[in-house]
Amino acid sequence: MSLYLWINLLSFAGPFLLSFDKKVHFYTHWKTILPGILLVGAGFIAWDIYFTENGIWGFNPDYLSGIHFINLPLEECLFFFTVPYACLFIYEVVKAYFPKFRPVRFSYYFSLIFTLTAFFLAIYFHENWYTFYALLGAGLINWIIYFGFTPSWYPYFIVAFFITQVPFLIVNGVLTGAATPEPVVWYSEEHIMGPRIYTIPVEDIFYNFFMLFPTVFLHEVLGKRLKK
Image (tube, rainbow, N blue to C red; front, side, top):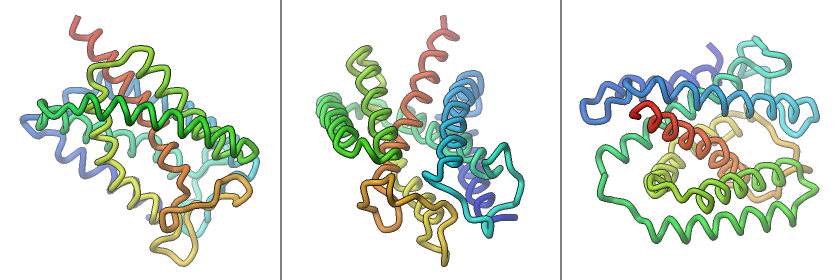
């Protein structure tokens, strides 16, 4: 089994085995989990295909199974389902175990600073494709959903987002060469700002937010409709 496939498997296995926790009942959310992950994942796979074709990033065949979907490794496609699944699990754990911890004011200031920072850096580094699209997308999705709807669950999402950065950075660290002689996933230096968290481009944090926020939004919207 390839290294990247192991990463996907382990990312999914932990949350799946814990999904039967009596307080979280994560296994009961399949009707809202799958549509959100599939819809958002499809969009990110399309983006991934385009960026791979244009050399914005690429993959080291030494750490892959060799199975491809169009020009994407199977492992990369699975990434857009296993990682959001794990992050949604963390989000539901936060809601179940810390229902009273809702840092509303902090969430507001975080949202404001995050959006302004994302817009500023996207414009400043507009020639860097990954920087521009990842930060612009993260800023827009946050601005539209938070300032347009101000969902009551947003503070839970922010807490969960901070928690998910620990496993996300570990996974991305392995993928970007922190534990291997060469990176599993490489980035064109011409299309990133340059600063990295060890081996991880800073853009990945905004990319992670851009992928997770609409997934949680769809999960919550569908959940409310099912209750009605």
